[in-house]
Amino acid sequence: MELRTHVCIDLPETPVARDLRFVASTLKIIPELDGIGDHCSNIACAHKRLNPPAFDPAGDLHERLGQSCRAMVKQSLALQ
Image (cartoon, rainbow, N blue to C red; front, side, top):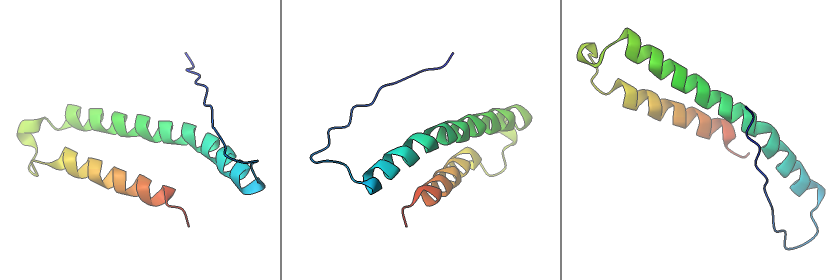
């Protein structure tokens, strides 16, 4: 099932090419971010299945994995 949402953007003036490129690139990156989230979820589930919490030597591995993923996504989305 595909979820469709509608976004209404209130622009204070007529958009220029830069604005339209930004909107277009934002719309193209949304499915990629969704895929990243799906992969992260699958990795977390596989890790829990393969390494029960009682055998987690680091103790906070899930938290560190989450922080690492957030940092990588933030870095990849940083505007130049």
